[in-house]
Image 1 (spheres, rainbow, N blue to C red):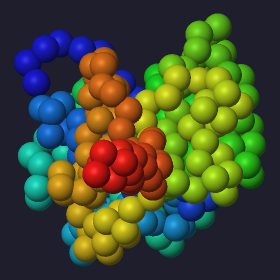
Image 2: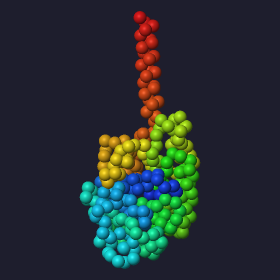
Image 3: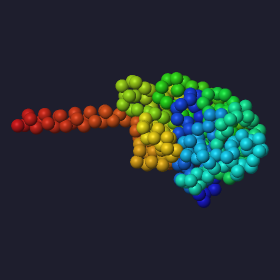
Image 4: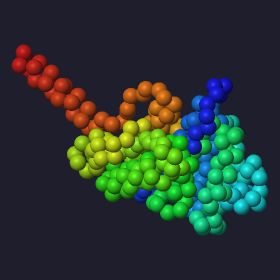
Length: 284
């Protein structure tokens, strides 16, 4: 990308585990890199490394984030170049250390080096409010809060929003982290009949700008299992939804998709068909 822009640290976070943070981190990092931005995605989930599996580079991990933090190796030795997108790199987590191996000073040093090399630094945060999650969000310029359409997930996300406004580097100097809401595993048909929260419900509770809605899709699991982010499959609804997220993240106005009930649309079509047929019978 030729345009000059300040490097941005974006944390992908949530209060609840299993909502799709790592899937979203891999897709958002891949999408930004495909747009021409130098992008790195960093796995902060020390001890529970999964990002490398989603990116399909697990067999190429030699050194990790902790090795760099401890000064055992240089940053470039731990970075893994993505084989699909030339502008994308991965900094994997350690699978054998615990989260106490991270320090604020060490993370600051690594992120400072990454800011010099990349346009976007995507931080894949662990769930909850423990040390790894705090360190992942502390240096953030922007935060994408990932939630599922269920009340426990939304409540935990509200807790994360409180931490973003009080426990980050920006908060310490009186500034705000730019917050975005990403709803994952959304099924508009189920939301329509009250089996899960609607987009409107979630947006009203959390009161932060909505950056995207990712539909519930088997394609997400399939892509994860083969180590290829679903955004690389533009024929899938989830892949299209993540591409829309990238456009919005870059400031483009993109209409929300996958938020209307398919069943409702089909029923409306049938009702029109039945009405037309009834009118024809009356004429005859």
